[in-house]
Amino acid sequence: MTRFRTALAPLAIALLGLTAVPQQAWAAPPKPVPPVQGKQAATAASPCAPTVTGATTNARLTSLFTTHGNDNSSLNDWTGADGTYSLRLPSGRELWVFSDTFLGRVNPDGSRPPVVEEGGTTVFLNNSFAVERDGRLSTIHDGTAAKPEAVMPPRDKNHWYWAGDATLAGGIVEVTYQEYERYGPGAWDWRWHRNVLARFAPGRLQQPISVHDLPSGHGAPGPPGPSRTGVTPTSTGWRTSARPSTCTSPGSRGRACSAPGSTSRPTAPGRRARPTRRA
Figure 1 (tube, rainbow, N blue to C red):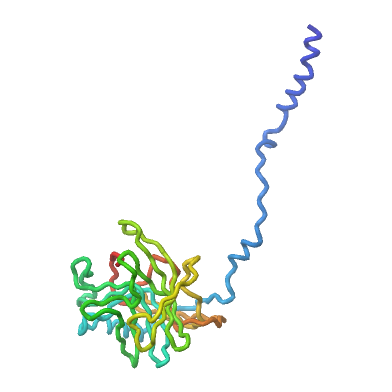
Figure 2: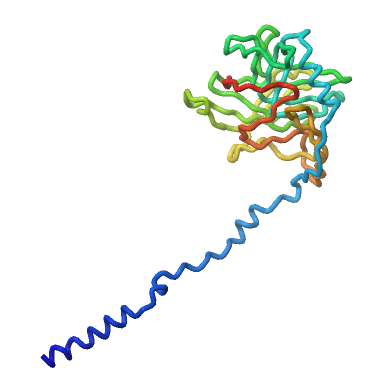
């Protein structure tokens, strides 16, 4: 019996040693991972990033577009749009570049008839232009007055283009567009597909003279320009933002920016936006 107890003694001591270990030694939290310097540098603001110092309503532009949109003397004219950019043409005229665009009649209460696809008379295009000269606007689209079409036509009914920034190169208007595609029957079954550069002759803006693929890794609409003043359509009018910048890269004058791929898009002045199906 004494030999049995003697043999068990080392085992008992070992077991006591294990149970005597403090519990927190088994549950100690891991050490924090040190930050990666490379990732922090990647999120740093670009020295060319514009800084918004204030915003005010641009009364001239609000009046210009409201008057043009409410004028029912022509029923194939612009009555509202989004995705707005602008560019000074060699002739001194101002080119306004739009994405989703309404053409047609405006009711006395500021509303529109339903779109053509829903049995109404309002024409809906995915992109268009307007040219400003001597305080007046003229709408530019392809097709005919009876059947207007987008200035950047889609390849088929399941694709369309939304406009990006614009610039002048050798007297030619160059506009970046993002192509989107529908892949299912649902209202949100669509996605970004690619970027292209469309080139337009300033004297014939109804359709591009050529279209070129652009690098499309991130869906970016184009490089920032040297604008110091941006004009943006809002629900109550056009607002001007002071945006001091040290950038010197080519770009447009007085453009209104929107994030690439964004589905929250500004509404043109004085208009009640309504959900519409993509063409």
